Image 1 (cartoon, helix red, strand yellow):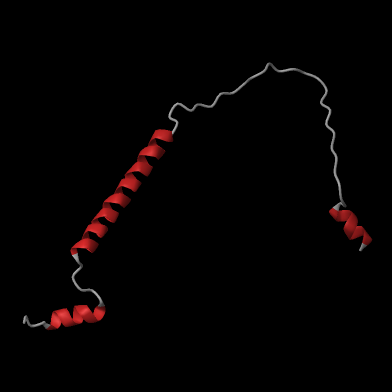
Image 2 (cartoon, rainbow, N blue to C red; image 1 turned 90 degrees about the horizontal axis):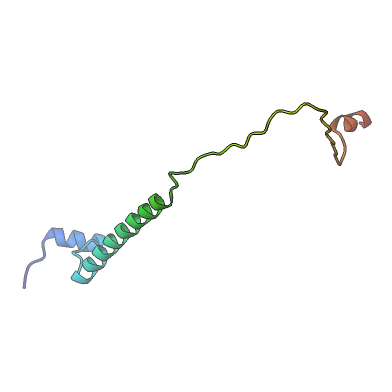
Length: 85
């Protein structure tokens, strides 16, 4: 019977015993899978960026004339509330 050293007793007490082969494979697959997801995300973001995006301005010749503006409002004006107080 192999003797269990103090390191294995401490590891067992802390719950950090050596992983089985199955859990090692699972951890490895999850690691590679998360790396693949991160790489795919970077590739998609890089592919979606629009490098040819330019701003286009529309210009019109200047015209002189009258400007008509209609202003509407609803509710009470703040200073009218102060007047009633």
